[in-house]
Image (cartoon, rainbow, N blue to C red; front, side, top):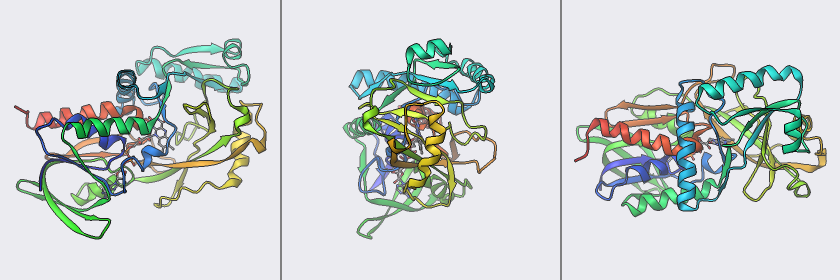
Amino acid sequence: MDADITIIGAGVIGLAVASELADGKSNVYVIERSASHGRGISSRNSEVIHAGIYYPKGSLKAGLCVEGRRLLYDLCRQYNIPHKRIGKLIIATTEDEMDQIDRLLDRAKSNGVTSVSPVDQKQIREMEPNIKAVGGLYSPDTGIISAHALMDYYLQMATANGAEIVCGTEVVGIAREAKGYRISTVNSRGEEFAFISERVVNAAGLHSDTIARMIGNDYVLRYCKGDYFTIANAKKGIVQRLVYPVPEKNHIGLGVHLTLDLGGRMKLGPDATYIDRVEDYKVAPDKGDLFYESAVRFLPFIHREDIVPDMSGIRPKLQGPGEEVRDFVISEDQPGFINLVGIESPGLTAAPSIARRVKEMFGAIRPRA
Ligand SMILES: Cc1cc2nc3c(=O)[nH]c(=O)nc-3n(C[C@H](O)[C@H](O)[C@H](O)COP(=O)(O)OP(=O)(O)OC[C@H]3O[C@@H](n4cnc5c(N)ncnc54)[C@H](O)[C@@H]3O)c2cc1C
């Protein structure tokens, strides 16, 4: 087999790229090492459609989040992908935190997120009578989505347009050759197979740096784990919107916040802890004390016994602890080889716009007839 385009990784990014590039004419392959698609970062996140408030002005994270959010809501409406535009409050729990609220409002405006508006204590009380805040911001365009339904949609679009998804197959080596890239794989039965692909997209999530190093590009990802705790079902319905305190000063996470899923279940998290490079998804129950203390400041109705360990996810970060925030890498580092590295949050929201960006980059190399 020879391929026109090979995408490494069948998470939301690889699948979005596949659905954008599959055109019924090119041989497009998606190679995924897990037994099925969507088992990596894309299945372990908050499923929030972010508005684009937090990210540095002019960054890919800001621009692609704002564009991706619009594209995502359009897709959801058009193809009945389960989602809800429930809105989000970013709140200050003390007067001291209000200057951070002001700074976030400025940042939101400079990122083109014009729907965000300041809200005072009274307005917050009217919207969410059960939370405690002195003031904040309201983002009506933030929402939630079923990440799995989105990935299933992308998979269907890609395969309907001729892409082939090959699961249970790991990419173990890549070498540049005259006609493209020789991709070496091993499948779950231990069988080796190699083929040539004219173009390659590296969408391997937590392993995208390893893939990039196979062709000599030296990215290094740091793993930053985010744990979640569930709030007892008895409290379901007590809060209607996502509620975030002001972000952590160290910028590694957005602070323990309240998320809701499409069934109205409330979750706290994710926190942010740098870990060794292992995919360990256990959630330590004793962390519950910390989650409780962070959350009870703005969710006074919760009791310690209400919160129980839930799932966790791992962020593929380009920056280490205490380092300046780094942007997504979307880079054609070798001719016809695009690396997508450091695709942490808001990667789910930005997926449709990242896919468009990849298509544009390939278009610039060799315009299709
Ligand atoms: C805790 C947490 C919360 C988040 N919350 C949000 C949110 O609310 N909103 C938002 O917009 N974003 C959020 N994100 C970010 C978002 O989840 C990610 O940006 C997105 O899912 C990344 O998708 P991906 O396809 O790059 O990675 P993945 O989903 O991990 O896909 C990569 C795939 O590559 C495969 N792979 C790896 N190596 C190989 C190999 N050698 N050969 C073959 N296949 C390979 C893996 O098995 C995997 O399936 C969050 C992330 C985390 C960790």
